[in-house]
Image 1: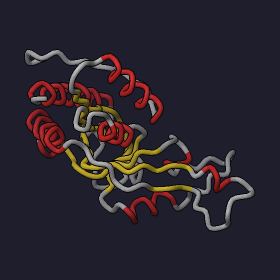
Image 2: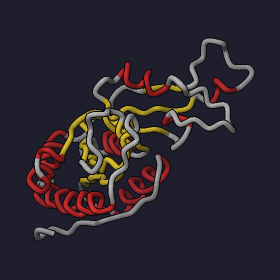
Image 3: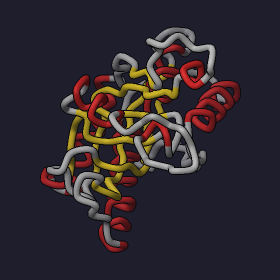
Length: 215
């Protein structure tokens, strides 16, 4: 693409699959790496439109605190932990935003904080009557800590964290963008045509950003 060799890889869902991908890709790739995620997400802000693409300027991880649900857990233990922010590579992130805006229009691109969860259900605040999840206040707690959080999914934090943990330092650069497929406050869901447009044009924009990056 653009005279550069790029890999397009489908990895599946969740922290573990991102971990598999990055560690195994690192094991077989010589030299520096740049990785950009294109995924899907739910929106946490009513103002964020479905069909838009959101770029993460930072990501926090929400994890179920398994010890809390044990009968021997201290009474003060919280059911979920919310991490501090992990940041993308600034140059690559800026290139991703610029490429998306040129390809789709600035009105179809959002920037903000991403929230990554370790479950599709409990740690994303979804109610399930079959399980004791104690998550009825979780989304409000997330937004209290990160008022500018706009997206919630299950991979971006792991990408940013492992890129920053990769040795030698600076040898893996990362950014992430997601198509907003559902607005959780309003219940609106993206249509098929808008989804296909965002995936196609967004994907080409991300490849352009990668191809133009000098490693």
